[in-house]
Amino acid sequence: MGKAKSFWDGFVRLVKFKILVPILRSNQPPSYTARGSLVGLIWAMTPLIGVQMYLVFMTWLIAKKFFKWDFNLPIALAWTWVTNVFTLAPTYYLFFVTGKILMGQFQQIGYEAFNSFISPFKEDVSIWEAFILFFKLFLKDWGIAMMLGCVPWAIFCGWLGYYSTLKWINTRDARRAKIAALRKMHPIRHLKEKHQEKKELRQQQKELREEKAKTSEQKQSDSG
Image 1 (cartoon, rainbow, N blue to C red):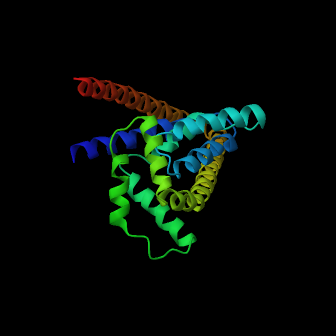
Image 2 (spheres, rainbow, N blue to C red; image 1 turned 180 degrees about the horizontal axis):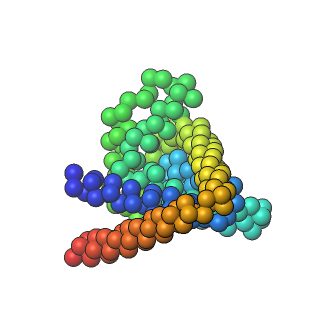
Image 3 (spheres, rainbow, N blue to C red; image 1 turned 90 degrees about the vertical axis):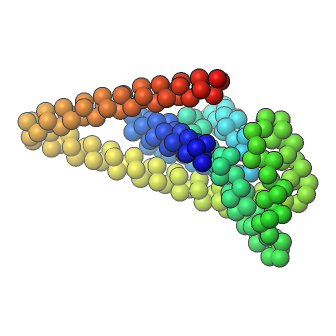
């Protein structure tokens, strides 16, 4: 329970400081950040936990070099943590059931056999061990269903991430433009709002320092 809570707290901090704060502070065009969400969520919604970050990085290199298509790499990498060791079983089973339905095999979607087979993935394994396990999974027919079943989810979540990020950033920019116009009309209010912004910035910086301190303490406790 403590381990799960610790992971959840870390995951919430990851989403806040590695995704939300960078999006808010980004000076890049909205589509640049939205493309990062798109790529990250597409790879996140695949049965390739353990190598997703490497695949995002390879996608970034190939897209930038050969297709002149760029996206926010840190945002994309952070989104791959949506699927992790704690969400592996339900997401893999979701892919499996979806794949079996698409294949028309409605009688072969039992959870117990599936869960017993993927239980090794729940352990802390290396990248090479993850490849070996997935290869075994694929050979047993589970992998075919999962690879097929993840496709609609990857497309849907990628689109949803792109659309939501784009809408959020555009809404934020419109609100900022409105505030800027009001500041010109009401200079006193502008000073108050500027003071409030500085206060919020100091609070964010304080939270970042606390986050780094917690991470350092956690690493020391883990190593001890």
